[in-house]
Amino acid sequence: EQVEETYIMVKPDAVQRGLVGEIISRFEKKGFKLTGLKLFECPKELAEEHYKDLKSKSFFPKLIDYITSGPVVCMAWEGVGVVASARKLIGSTDPLQADPGTIRGDLAVQTGRNVVHGSDSPENGKREIALWFKEGELCQWTPAQAPWLRE
Ligand code: DAT
Ligand code: MG
View (cartoon, rainbow, N blue to C red):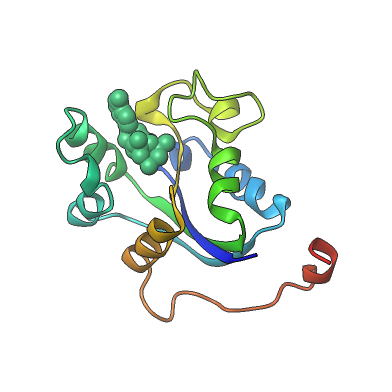
């Protein structure tokens, strides 16, 4: 059982819509460990680096405009299986296809305003956390509830 890290980001639409607490609470209540958290205005170059695999897509310029259109909330979460589990909590890329009960399924209606990001692999989790957080911005700690979450 490998402890993984994932980068979760509340996108600008969700910050503007007052959904920050709602979105953070989904991961918090599930039982994952928060190791990094900040409100942040994303520079264009960072957005482009984060989404570099999508550079050739027609929607890339709009995606960069969207992500840099206002503050985002950057988070690092840790736990066994956190990468795939967070993707399930988030739901499908297109919120109209996302299952009810997921963040996108409950809170969004369009791919271009899909309220939250989550890393798609443990490797990308590490890459993205290193990209969005500086050294000293992450906390290593043991939540008091740890023995009540895993035997
Ligand atoms: P996800 O965010 O579910 O990992 P992705 O990595 O394929 O999805 O794409 C990153 C973001 O780019 C996605 O959250 C919203 C945007 N995007 C993806 N496909 C799109 C499309 N066909 N039209 C417009 N925006 C799109
Ligand atoms: Mg993705």
